[in-house]
Image 1 (cartoon, rainbow, N blue to C red):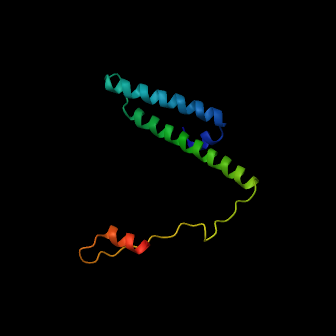
Image 2 (tube, rainbow, N blue to C red):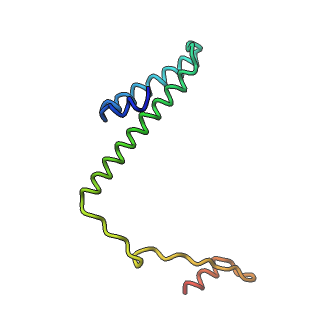
Image 3 (cartoon, one colour):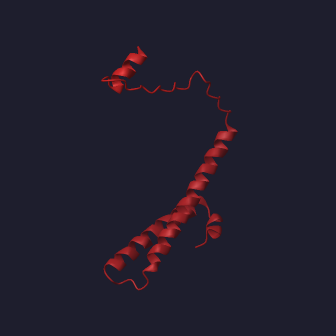
Length: 107
């Protein structure tokens, strides 16, 4: 099935399609294992269709979340003070370990 055709479907239809394709893929794998599957390329086609449906569901979910976030109050920007400070690298000198040097640097 083409992604263009899938985009026209509703969210519930896509969820049902995902379940049925996943079930069909399982059945095809099982038939292949028991040597009853005539066309083994069907497994790969079904897996790709499942991936297409999951991609579209993810896109719809992200679009729904972005619509909700833009309609709500704008988020406040994170100021430089609230950001976590960057850690300084401790230089290992002589017999001292890096951990000891770092603990002395933080004192």
